[in-house]
Length: 325
Image (cartoon, rainbow, N blue to C red):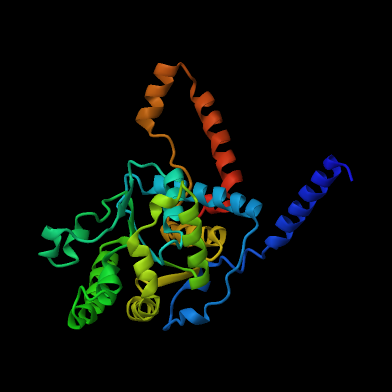
């Protein structure tokens, strides 16, 4: 057999394996946000359904959802609307990937990300919730906490950094804190990304081998993995005790990164856009008047161009632009 033919056959075999590796998934039922709401104590060991998304479907849906979130952010500007997104999950579960893709879509002037690490010496002398008050969203802002006050009932509990009385009391304190936020008008969305132990081990190996991802690994990642059984109990307790009607948890199976991201984005688009008109605002009359003078355009020219732009937006993002999500 000639080398060129052998090479072509190897390439065809590789392509065939790639096509068979990820079957095309049924999307709409799998990413419905209501599917992920925690209403009772979850059993993480029983969470075995980890759907997969086709990459082309993922890209199409991601672009559409990013567009909806852009419109939502613009609707918040100049209003009292504000949102707080709490991201929790296992190490390597994909929290960073969700944050990056939010950052690609949203204007950084009113979109803020706060990666939460261990409290410093000054913060340890304060009530553990105090440091989070400084970073709550202002009017018009969307804020992400990459990890959060839930460290009190997770890492501080498991590692013995909080007494049993402290972490048990924290469930009530956190629920009361979140009630204050939601009562004051903050849209609070809490996401937990779950991956299996086997998938986490695979991602650890990938990070260790890949020089572009190696910086993400730390000693703490491997130490936390040795305590996984303790973390499972702590996570299940946390989800049971703090998933409330006013601030429910969304538990997302994220073994497939593409599915996890789309599920997260659908939840955010629904919760951040609920009751908000996504139709672009009309041109300010004073701005309209000045534009006619400076740009030497007639009122008809401006209205015609604005109408065409509005039509393109509605065509791209669907009927949700005309009415609340």
